Length: 113
Image (cartoon, one colour):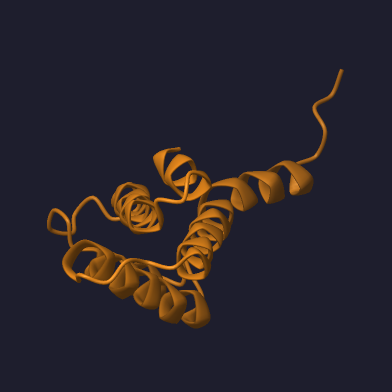
């Protein structure tokens, strides 16, 4: 993932932009009917549909705004801020993509042999 490469090489502003973009693309799969590139609306829709918790919604909006700052502000992102974006992105992807499948596998009865 580009964000991890940027983070690992000390390009923290670029990492923040890449993690924000990753969220944009990942959430588009859950809300294809929402206007193109409207991350704010996608986050709110997922929360309204109980696909993410209110705490995740709040954190997602903070990440969204921090990512916007990385793209539009002159100040460089810090390692700590970029690392938080990376961690949130990782956790949200697990919550939306990985965890539901793991749960489904656990609650399905084993296939008869």
